[in-house]
Image (cartoon, rainbow, N blue to C red):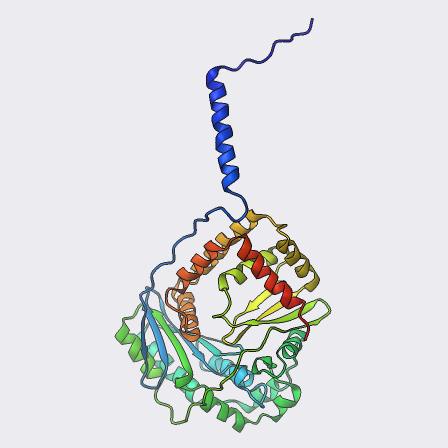
Length: 388
């Protein structure tokens, strides 16, 4: 005989079951895509003092306990200023990098369309510090610009992305090429390079930051020691307009021209590139600039497919939330340690951004919802489909 006895529930069990059901309904109805309120850490307040050196440089300083004094020099001498002598900024940056090693300076030197960027770590030992300041000032004002090294640099060749960037920007100074052409590099003499150095590596074209375990008076002594008055005239500023939205492509690689750093929602574009790069690493890279920003896309067809999925709402919102937390963590690391903080401060200084920019970015990141996320995706999708 079969047992037909039904399971029995007491009143307490039924009440618990009903309560759990209600809680689940509330949770599921309040965490749909774009509706969850994400908790992100707050940006710390930065104690920043600013001043202009006697020689004309704009300086941002903040004290921080550190074993070194970290100094950043960003000169308005990027390759947009090459004019007809394409590759001048590149040659100068490379020669400074070479000579900094000869002078035993702990320097990192790089170049983009807007700036020659120099990072310097100074020793806190008084005698070592004095020698480093003397060597740094000599390098910035009186570099050797060695002919033998200049000859080696003239053999440089451009990459495919450099060529695509030139196509995307057309006649605009942001076109580069960053490293010049074979013809232009051969035509730049050492005397012409010296003239470029005198005009563009000029203190009146300099944005600077100082971070370390020193007071403001000491920081001012350091900057005035390194940056005496120049006997040369600073180059006059070029009045340039931004380039329109263009793109150039070859095979599955694209270079896309976008608005400048102040016109873009930095948080939205960081989030977009972060999520896309989780699908395939390094397939989307943003390079922000004053007049225009540039997007480098590897695997163009795959990226277009992903953007179309986002446009149609076919993406996991939980991935977005995790990405927001990861980006916030990465951003906040820019404020940890004297070297990272010095780079962050000179970035704000050079691009004319406020001291509370980190808090603004975190708020923008927190406020990104489905609509704004899809709008940013659509903008890149349209740009990728834009032909010259």
